[in-house]
Image: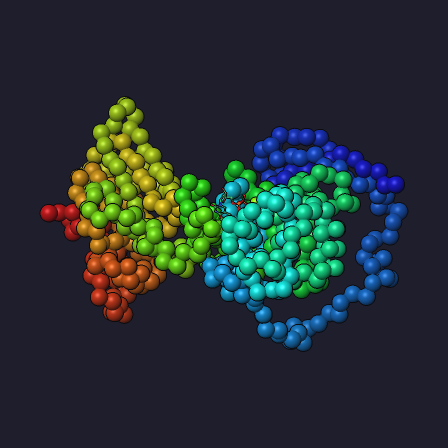
Length: 460
Ligand code: TYD
Ligand code: MG
């Protein structure tokens, strides 16, 4: 029998070490070494493996690029427009998709919904985490037809794939990769080598049988997919499911897609009957109050290819402690300090003695630089206690010298603002070149500096 020995592997970069070490010398990460068992074979006496392969197996033929026939990519309709969009227009046969997200965000719900709505005869849902009864209860909450969905509580990858091929499943969902193990590997489930081995088997099965497979993966506190980065390289598509658990909105982001664009973004709302696609996200993300309140402004942002109107809210008040507080929710704290410094230096506002709280309504995180102008507007509005008109929105990046910089796809932003009933939009004057092409009725206010913003929007 082959001997096995203990070895430590860095879960971040895969470097091996005979002893546990706290700091990986290869990638510089801390506390990433995990013990695993490696089977020892005497490789010195053996023939190189490629020679053995050459004797036994018949490899695929090598072809010149122009000899290869194009096949039209057939996509399956998931029965969910938002998931179709995230996958680049539907599910591709033979593809492996990784769905990653924090615990409790709704990964199992999303894929169980898919299993019950997709128009296929046999969908196999493998659960290594929950009992069949738990899944049944969830399925009842979702209130969808469920005649095509088969459950299998199993964690051994060999028996999973064997059963799947016996029943000729047309779609397999594996919940989750961290609970599945491969019998020929002696490490426990969830370790780097188990995840890698199981993923290998899964990918090979998907390609050979030409069926789509979904894998659910947990993410660590830092937001990385638990297990080796390798997993992300191996699969065809990586989807991230994110959102704040205290809010009902969830965002499905495409981080990698071999069959489509990675600019996609889908929005869901979690309610008592599962996840519902949000068809008009802008209307939902704007806070629902009629009266004009100071400190709030609307930003016209773009996430992926989708324009989204979000409300930025600021509260500026006299500091209680000697060091004023700067607290931002859904926005980078350092960026907030930078915008405050710009307002202080370029416009003479005194934020140095004020506590500043900033919130992006809806609990979603947006990284679009076009948010800056709206944040600056809400900060001034709160400081001056001057409520902005409800029908004005902003899209611009603020630079260190107080200039308002041009942002991308401004015509899309203007269209969305008009569609949502806004009467005016403030943009950078450097975006002015789009004006001759612009056919919308909305008033466009062009601004060069933050000072101009104050003069044109706030001066009474
Ligand atoms: P789940 O899919 O189990 O999350 P994950 O697999 O990512 O860990 O979803 C968990 C949460 O979703 C749970 O807190 C309850 C909530 N939920 C609803 O609000 N409505 C529903 O219809 C369902 C099925 C779940
Ligand atoms: Mg789950």
